[in-house]
Image 1 (spheres, rainbow, N blue to C red):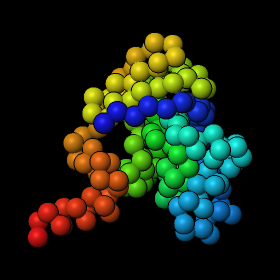
Image 2: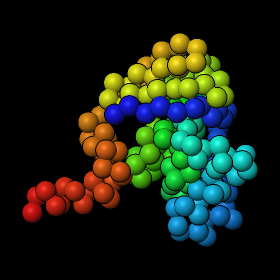
Image 3: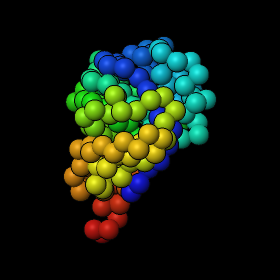
Image 4: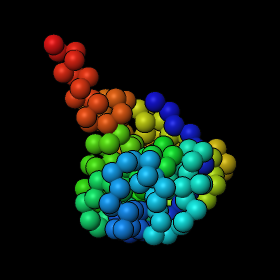
Length: 166
């Protein structure tokens, strides 16, 4: 599976409180959550992400509270993938659970500028910056995670497995 999109960059220690601030946690509709994605840092983010983007972060992306609404807001706002130097463990797990690809890519924050066009191969982990020619290697996702992502998240993956085993 290959994903392409324009990069939107954020720095280190982007926590779930800025990805989706507390006042918006009352919403349960993922499309309503998406309207407030990254509201703690950039109120225009949902408009920028609507065309389909790849978020690039530095170290410790998604730290803070374990709110699953943070990756949901990103996914439904138009984020196709998140690349970062490292992730908070619970954010990483929540993202995979809801079907948002997240890849650890050492050096990505220094090799990508805001607006660069990126292509990410989820099977191989190869990340290409089409704007400046940089090629990076992210962590390759295991087959079972690829299956979850291909199915659109853990719930859909489990539904498919149940249906195919009946």
